[in-house]
Length: 250
Image 1: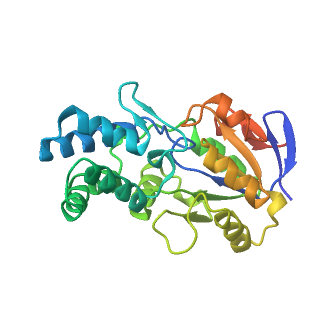
Image 2: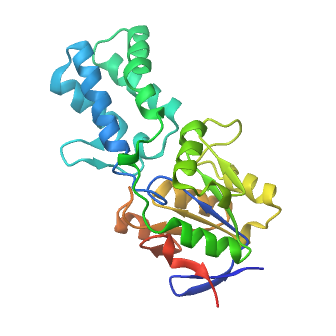
Image 3: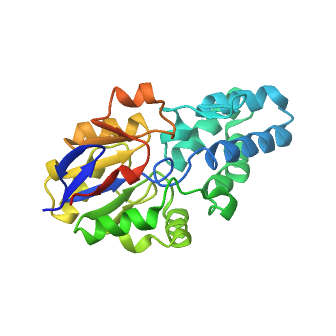
């Protein structure tokens, strides 16, 4: 069984499950700016002005004045279909008829939030190739669990040239359980024929870590994503600065 060093701790690990945004790449470069562009477009389309922009951002958990995505909010944790429903509800609360609100969200929000990432938006948190190659060479199996859609996720992995390192990728629009349902981790362990105690979940949000604990999986919190260090430290078994702290022993 592969033996890994994780920030000074040594553990036997068969499967490492990574969150994507905030763990492998910079979360804040992508989702806050995209939400702001969507909110501005929706305000222009409805004449809602700055008040609507503020309401939309607040509804999804984005502090647009500080450019801060809030952990545990829909923008940080929800699949795209759920995020769309939140925005539709916010538009309805702002005076738009429900059908009009749904049409507006589908025109101005969803295409933007599900679009493939541009080169300017992609900022790896560390040297992903070196780390993932070392883990794979050590015999550790790797997987991704993300709420992002499959098309955009697969495109990103291709752009980063790291798709081949992962045995399994579970996305927010796949059939079956979706993060933060702990069944995501049990399904990954079952698919890889791995016992849950030999699985670790690596993520930057409280949802990632809570999912790990619910599944009986070791939780590794990554600083610098959507969760503050204070928030993460209350839920993580181990805290790291980036995934470079996870490496083969010996």
